[in-house]
Length: 148
Image 1: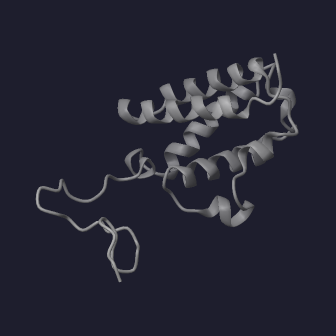
Image 2 (image 1 turned 180 degrees about the vertical axis):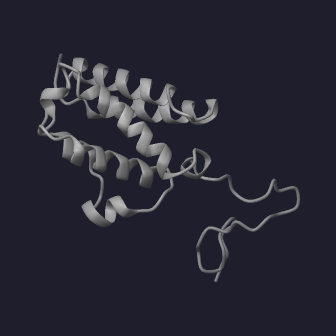
Image 3 (image 1 turned 90 degrees about the vertical axis):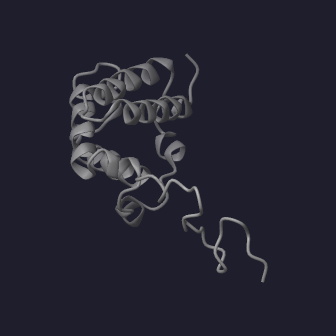
C-alpha cells in the first residue's frame, strides 16, 4: 500500500507533528468562541431583530422557536460542534430548505444586517468575527433566489 503524504496508512488524515510543525491543528471556531452558549446568544440576538423586521418577519411562522433551534443547531455543527443538526434533520441543504421563500436583495440585505449586527455584538474576538462575517456574507448571497 502506498502512503499518501499527510495521510496515515488507512487513508485517514494524519495530524502527527513533524519537525518544525507548530503543533496540533487549530481548534474549531466552535471551541474558540466557547461552544454552544456563544451560538445560543448569537441566534437569540439575530432572531430578536428578525421578530421586529417588516421585510423578514413575514417569511417566518408565528412562533420563531423552531427556526431559532434549527439555526442554532446548524451553526453549532457547521463551526465544529456536535452533529446533532444532521442527526435530527439530515443534510443541511440550505438552498433547498429556503427555496419556498422569496429571497431577493431586500431580504438578503435585511438578513445580513441583522446577522452581522449579532456577530458584532457577540463576545467573539476579531479573527472569529471576521470568519463568521465572511461566511454569513457568502451564505446570504447563496440564498438569493429571486430578482429584485
